[in-house]
Length: 125
Image (tube, rainbow, N blue to C red; front, side):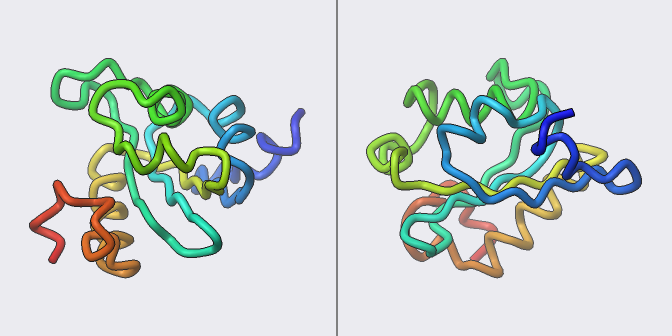
């Protein structure tokens, strides 16, 4: 069993692994969840990976992070341009509702709307 998978708690399915974006995008579970991206230690972006997301084919954290890595779809240009300097923390969630709720809480907590990377989340202001 990999180090990454050993961090997943069976009870709450939580992954708290901070690592390079490149490592995480290749090793993240393909499950519903939330991710936090940091640049130079500062939280810059909070996102979620949920199934059937408004016309996207995202099926979990790994695929969503790979989309960001490639700069595909509606990914933020800032994420793509800084991808080699980003670190990522993941939390696997048990439901879409939990992921949405946690994402909103983290956006408010870290005020990522203010820095411009979470612009589409006007409701979190």
